Image (cartoon, rainbow, N blue to C red):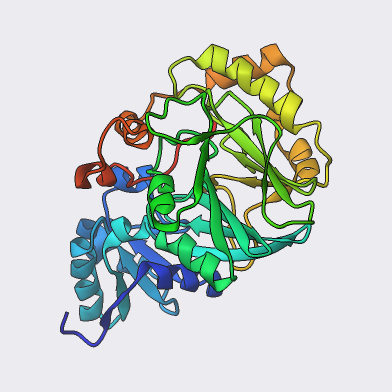
Length: 366
């Protein structure tokens, strides 16, 4: 683009800008139905065709980042702004690039280092947990070099790779990461994976360092999927997968067996998670748009806090099932192919990767 008032910016830089400057004005020039489905938190929607008439809605003092699906409409909008003397930056690659924007935050939990990897455009959370010279990776995405690099930076080798469940909203990088690192792949035998792996069972310990009681334990928690599994780091933290989020609980309807899965989810919550200490830190596998995400602060909360903030956790079983069924939604059509790829029943291809674009829809939402 020729104008000095029009530049480009990467998705990772947008993440940094949003964290550093709350006055950044993200201008989304897609159509309203596109924005309703998926957008950058805090973005203002002014469709490209309306921009000329709504120019005064853009704050004069704010830095402007222009966004569309892949960049072309945003470039046209930036040129219109430049004609009015306003500088702006176009998100290079648009929302497709935003889907692969990552940042990380480290926490020390009971002597282990927990690196939370946040896929900001999807609300996906994965983890590299290390102690001594070994690490376990939970729920890696396809960008597997992120996990290998993080482990190397901390002086760890990746010893284990695990998933919390058979994912439906995004593609798992577990097998690819295992191929690169030689790590052991541990998965639930209750989800229909069609390739080789070590079978998780309740109470299994994946030791990270000799002589230190820092372990990751697998506990079956069916409800979101048949094989949903959570992992505990000693008594200090639980990696709850899609069973419990900071803003809700996991959807029980993705397998099209909503009522029995809702009952299983209730039992999993009340028998496996809620008996834990209020001080136990809950690290979920996703977060939704209502969750504020800040640089340097993990997306996590003490279980005691969630007991008070999530009304669903105080419901009796019949009330819980009725509530969950009331909020059943249509299963997103792309989920079936993503599940097939993650289960090893279909090869990964470019068109399947495109199915990842969009928000996660794994929580019960009203």
